[in-house]
Length: 104
Image (cartoon, rainbow, N blue to C red; front, side, top):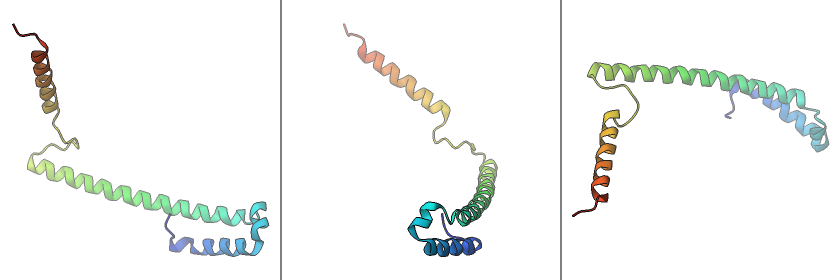
């Protein structure tokens, strides 16, 4: 995750704690409280950013649907129309069956 300004104080406190307790203190969990505070801060930042990105994507998709409706275009996200794939498979099976039949 990227570092945010609101979590900088928690991160600095955790770093100072980890530096002061050393390896044995880390393994003993002496800084776990600070670690949990820092992780909670980062989690809330992540959720907030995710919510904002979701709202922006929703607006962009609604705008895209609106433009397509104005132009009379379909708003589905598939690249091939459903009728085209059905007709292509029908012609492919017809040509395969024609080549499989013995000629007299």
